[in-house]
Image 1 (cartoon, helix red, strand yellow):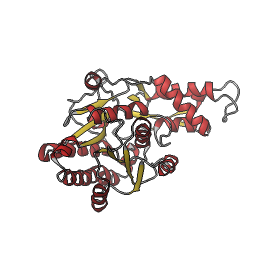
Image 2 (cartoon, one colour):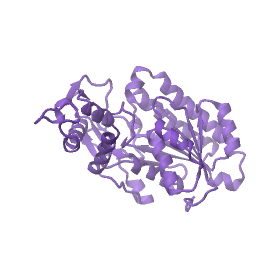
Image 3 (cartoon, helix red, strand yellow):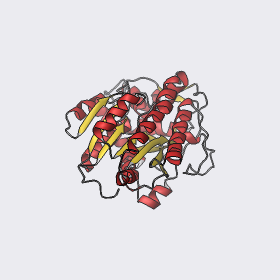
Image 4 (cartoon, helix red, strand yellow):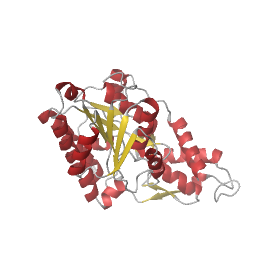
Length: 346
């Protein structure tokens, strides 16, 4: 599938393309390729509505509001659009929501992935031998399927055993297993990726980084679970989507690729770094700060999340060695771009 960027006859079906990572992926594809795109999204609360309006005006995009659990809709879309590949990003993804209301995660992440896989298999089996060989089903997953990483343990890699902790992580682990089963049993050409925590402009405000920025600018408490010593590897969303397209076009069928930002921080360190950036970008008068005060004053420790994993970290060595990928953004440069974007949009 190399050298596809200039091909206008290459057709991508992208599920969840109106979400945070999905919309960044669509924008990357619009900028770097000539592909025709079908964006299928349920348009829930997590959809980026500003991006949705822009996509509607883009002639290369067909935007469909729909559910990946709707088998009849999927059959119709496969028949009418005839995708060359699928990039499957549609998912319920907020851990807190999965703890409070897990049913939606089971339905979308497990049943939805099954329904999409089965529709893709049926469509793929109708293709010519050449088209079958070129077809790809790319499944975008998370490092949370690997569970809790010990403080001194080596980062997660493609051979790390699954040990999900939250209902969200368990639902994504289940979907990963389904994708591998469809490859092993039916021969469907699949590729899986597991990424670390994404961040960047346009992320929903329920997530840690945008919540920190918006609460600080509003003079509200910035909640941090427990003692804030949980460690995460942070990946700038534009680096992630560039890696996804690289994996789609050059990755090996049946393989898994781990994508990490190589930016491991504790939650407390991350929030403090954001507050320090805000001290420079949004001085006194931008919110409820008085002279001599700093945004760190809004940090507030709250009761820890049930089953909270203490550490995630990703080893991207396979992706780097096989496909030559490297993240373009450091955490400092990515956070600066992110904070500037939220300040400008305020």
